[in-house]
Length: 247
Image (cartoon, rainbow, N blue to C red; front, side):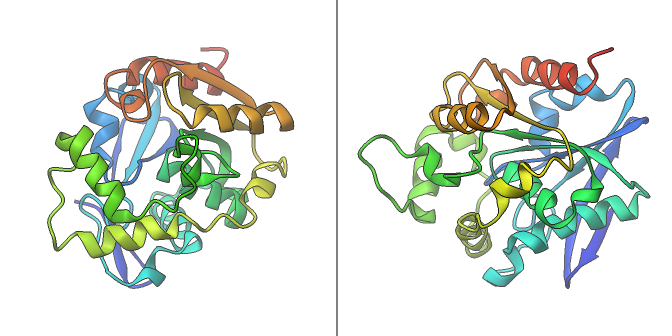
């Protein structure tokens, strides 16, 4: 079972298939299994090496409680370290939700490692706040987010134990680090695609950013979670068509 060690913590990853590298980065409270369970990864396996990474605090990666371990540069650095371990110089990086935040961190701190960047279900200006309903000013605390997840998608968070919560809380709080991300994405160093489910409230803010800055955006069926589960094949086909327009 492959791991890399970076800044004193282990990050779990796995690879599937062979060919051009595609790195998939999952959202908060999930793990890299989501890309397999929903069938997203399958769309790339015929001619790509798919790299699945468990974010710190999630899946089989270490789960330290120290908030400093979850800073964006460190999270993006773990992705770069996985690429180093696999001798990958540049990759198409696809992130959803927290994974898109981490992917944006790659654009800021390791832009030369990006062949392209796909940001799913995350707004480069508002971040987590893009999910707030009208009239709610926030902040949304980790305990509230976990309670909502347990109420609406309990099967996705059944793995969370009290021992996991300090690391997950630190990971959640780190998502507030947004400085310089929009500018990094607009630097032109790598092509950027924005992707959102039609029923994801974040889409209204993402659309504003995309239209204002001339960034291509695609919409697929589903809400914030179902785009990587029930509707994952549609999303994968759409993203792949943008990455490989010639087939």
